[in-house]
Image (tube, rainbow, N blue to C red; front, side, top):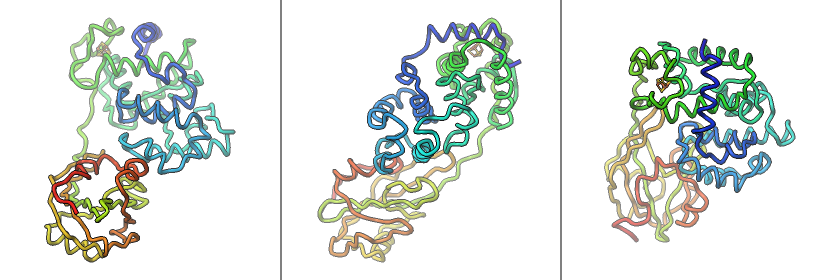
Length: 361
Ligand code: SF4
């Protein structure tokens, strides 16, 4: 058994007293829960909060999201990362407008058919917003329940998640309490008490009298998680190109691969020496007037680490062809205001101050 009835009731009581304020909790419509859960993937509550307010303020419902231009959507998401999440949200919203009258579908099974919605998000929406007896299993929940039950299953494996989901669903289907409170309580306990890093705060936990890991002194062994494969590293040369009008070159990245479809800085694989960089730019009709090496940058994605050598180059506007193609990317120049207002640049490219450098035309 993954959780007993008493433990569930203790958890719900604890949650009622200890729940943190979150705007989507105060008004848990299906749309609010969906937006917040997608934002919260890989991102902390404190970080999400201002994004949530501006997103809901600008896009208060499914229809508004479906109709929002992609560039504006990326701007609303700028800094949250994992941009495919918001692109999938737009696709899902378009589908909801066409097939569900602009509302989120109520059942777990229909939610699962929408782009970007997996078992976790479908479980969260159907249990929290629609009060359906569906489980919500993420890393926090796997950790808490592994400790409660003294389980040594590897929580990094998909089959472990499936097993927990099946057992929790069976358990929830037999209970009369609100699955919304239980699921939120489980997530909150994982975030505040049975924490992912460092010692769990067992003396503050509603389950301290029955938690197998705590009672047997095994909280440092459970949960079990096999080490992740090492990240691949990639080397890039990144260009901050300015023209005489102090505009900066921006590219629209290819439609596939990392940061696909996003705006970014011109970049090519491998490290170039300054001479090689100048020659390369020349082949694209960008004549370098001055080149300056900037501090190296690094950005860590889930599976890849980018190590970036950066050059700031002042290029002659005579040679600028705004439809120039940089590698497979489309390149154009935009001024500071346009870039700040219109083009969301992923944080991978925000390692350098674009506008206050030593050299300048
Ligand atoms: Fe986690 Fe400790 Fe609570 Fe067990 S008693 S669930 S280890 S915080």
